[in-house]
Length: 210
Image 1 (cartoon, rainbow, N blue to C red):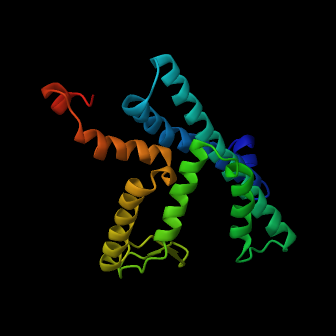
Image 2: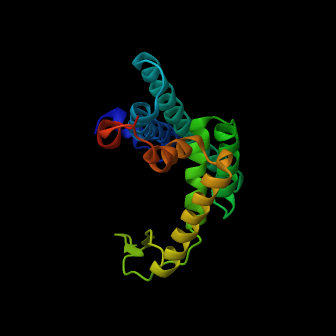
């Protein structure tokens, strides 16, 4: 092991290097998630020439990636500060406090990208309160004898009700209160449900939308 490797693996530096690694992972994940989404949205719904569309793709990808990098590093830093303030122990509310502060600082400014990320998180938070199905893989044994909790899918019956209510609500909103729907979803729903009502010839019926 080289001196650099020993330094990087030092327990005294672990928490600080984890903040750096978190920023790196947030940046990479943001690029992987946002770039293909922005590319598809630019192809389907983009306006203007391809130079302006590419600029929009770059800006959306950059904002998503940088915001995730900021949030992960800020969250880890606040968690570390709270542990140090509590004698090295983590309290139950520490994660909520760190997420609260990080979310306000990083995602508090309203933008199209931030709104999409926040709505994605909200939907997952709401879905997490659905009753879980009984599955054998809810706990995974670890080499040290401890167990790691694993995600468990929702109970099928409760999920059916959740899905029905979600789709019923969003279709009602699209028809009666479309101004309240997030722009990306509104564009998608317009393409699916309104544009499919209009065509001029065989080409616009089967090949091209308009």
